Length: 375
Image (cartoon, rainbow, N blue to C red; front, side):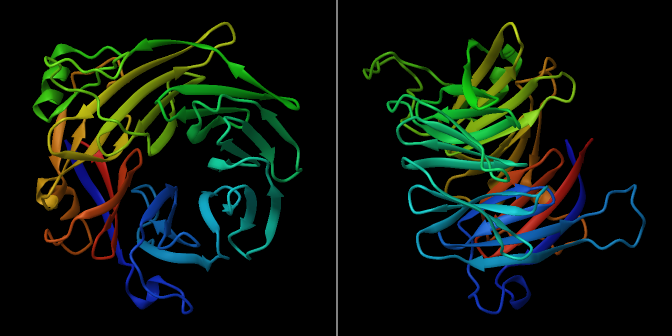
């Protein structure tokens, strides 16, 4: 079970939560780059909030808060797509093919380029930008030096989401939920081949997941679904993809791709001789929506119900020990700590999870940060 620790909240519709030249609105997009939360209320703006939540090892009296640190209304056809907390910069996509890196602190344009091809996905980490394009091409750019490398791809399987594994390696998820790994070597990009296998799930864990309406995805080689197929795979594209390094094993990562009705866990091992990816795909056949996922837990919200029907399911298909399984009602986490009790009449519209935190945005404009420990 999850034991609540720190609870913070901020009303994004209040005057202190937005700049004077912008109107209060509820964001439709959100991402978390510790300790910053980035949101967008329209395609051509962004807001960045800093979470100050001191740990128990820090001095008492330190401030706990969520505060607006930056916001900007961008030019038309320009959208913020990612940020790098390390360099305090934001990555922008201009139109269909432009890329800009801008300082969050003083709005200085640090890099600007017009790419060839329609950009389908873009991410930034450290000194590097990675872009996936409609024709399958992948580009990696050092935005500080302007040095770049490209690799041609397959336009039948374009990258929808792209993430860095390290400064020299990237991974993409295509519209058919397949992965591709690329490595930057000097001025060129090479493709890393890997073997694909399934993550095995114990019968006990599989039974518990089935009780929640989460069942293994059934992949079919054709579009005809037989009558006795209990859980046909819904047509869906990956909307989100996140990567976590395995702190116990070098060159090993955990990845999770998901949309409202499907989640795909992956364990990625990169070795000089051979690399492998093991995956487990689950689909929600019941009335639950998959709101957010972490390698050790996922947030489920029931369709048509308020947050009293939402829960965090604690389990880990990517770990050897799959016996640990618990369900924490969301209200237990939200109605704790230092913030005011959560109003159950409002529901979560956006959410993202860290290793020990949940960031939630409610449809009444409340941005909530909740940290927890494992009981």
